[in-house]
Length: 304
Picture (cartoon, rainbow, N blue to C red):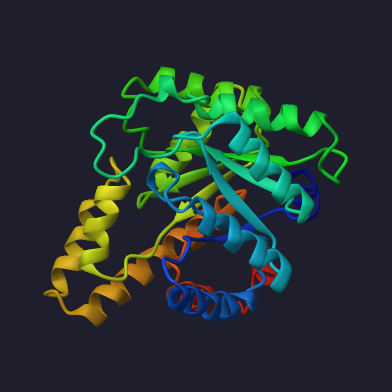
């Protein structure tokens, strides 16, 4: 379903994010977890690319499989890094043939081991350019939907790590929306005040599209450390760190603290009229299902 149609039907959306498996065995495990999350009736699910587009084919195959073999509506990530215009067109054509309705357009991360990627050497150096190309593809009439692909882009409540100038950062985000983006999905955050301030600044900058809040439950100390590496700039509030320190490193206790924190984040965001919650699942279903149970519902429609 096109993003524009989604927000005509749903006041609040609930979505889950997966990353592509690296083996056939991992693929089957992932599909078992996806099946468990189907019962929560998410508005859509998104599928990531690896750094530098390293999992491009796995992403494409997983997206098509979700579309063909489940009732879920997938939104694939598409990145600029290392992508040639012809390759992007081929990917868009394949997704159009399979009835994929939306794309999450990102600049993307540099390939592993590369100190500094020279985006200016790519056919698309910024996400806004990729958004514009997708909209141009829509004008070709190749997509079966009359409006073509809906386009989502990323937002950073705590600030983009590569753009310390916060005013310039909002200019870049506004440029992506002006290029045709229909939706913003934020990077994960742990303090809702950062999200509310980001949302207010977006509105002051003239950004009117829906903004979904990215929520990730901490399930292990090791996972939190990886999160700090991957989500550069992620801020861990002192109260969250204190709660984790009280566990003494006990794995079950760490997990309970993480799920409780994400549940309270979700409740507060819903109370403050968030456009949608986007759960980073880490390809597991248990924590997300626990959040729903603690919120007192069995699926997304009861939350909307």
